[in-house]
Length: 156
Image 1 (cartoon, rainbow, N blue to C red):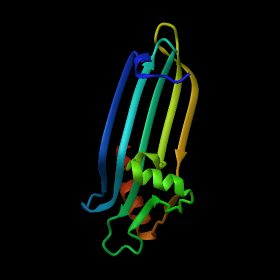
Image 2 (cartoon, one colour):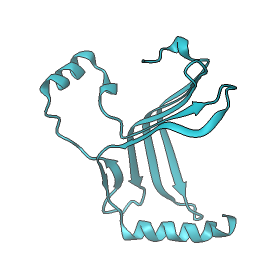
Image 3 (cartoon, one colour):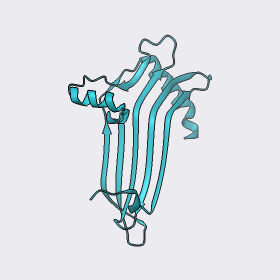
């Protein structure tokens, strides 16, 4: 059975088009910029079906090295794939529906609820999907993060 909106007793949804998170050291110098595009978080509960559902999708994740002399300015990005299904490509162009492509990161958990509405420790389903990615790190950036870690260590 597929759940519809009317089945839910509680539903909370947040969407962001683009978020950028910067990691800055004590210089202050920006080390990396994390770009998250088309973020969708949803939390819902249905007492009828005794489920607590959480979903997180991030369509695109890219992490950029902010060092101006970086040999590899892009640290982390989705790996470009050749789409071989021409029918799918034509449908995407015709519908202009960008959500048909797989997200870079997707997480879903489905937790069993007790009769009184409290959540049990039992998860009905947990799924994590991470699309093909390209990861490139430079030694200088790793050293910068190690120094930042040492500076933060007394506070952790």
